[in-house]
Image 1 (cartoon, rainbow, N blue to C red):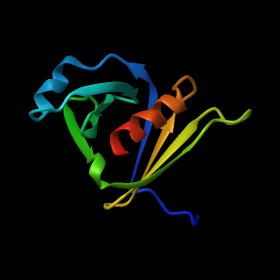
Image 2 (image 1 turned 60 degrees about the horizontal axis):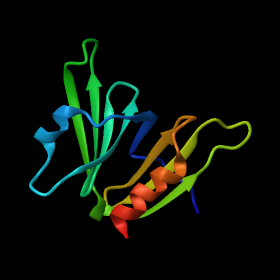
Image 3 (image 1 turned 90 degrees about the vertical axis):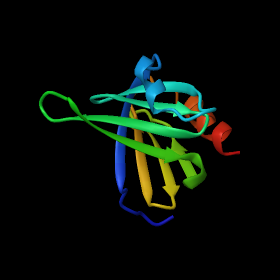
Image 4 (image 1 turned 45 degrees about the vertical axis):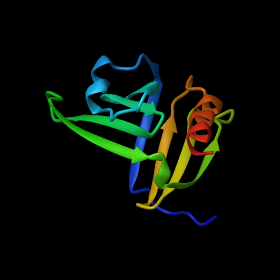
Length: 121
């Protein structure tokens, strides 16, 4: 497959408890399923979408929220870490473009892959 530049790139550090304040972002019938710590905030899988919160600035009070409905994902791939490569990678091809998610050592790539598959299939 030809190489394309991602429109977005996120790094997930470790699985974490679902943040309590995520409920204010959810719509009726939406339920959080799993959460991951990012460099400065968190990524939350729900039964309808992936929400990535990105704290910005020196104080982190400015927060940008990305919402990726599963219905916009056309295809995905996962690549587990090798002997010398510590990060696993997930690539999502969406209607908006290509998104790359790096998973640091310790994040279960197969659990992550199953979260996507459960949401899409």
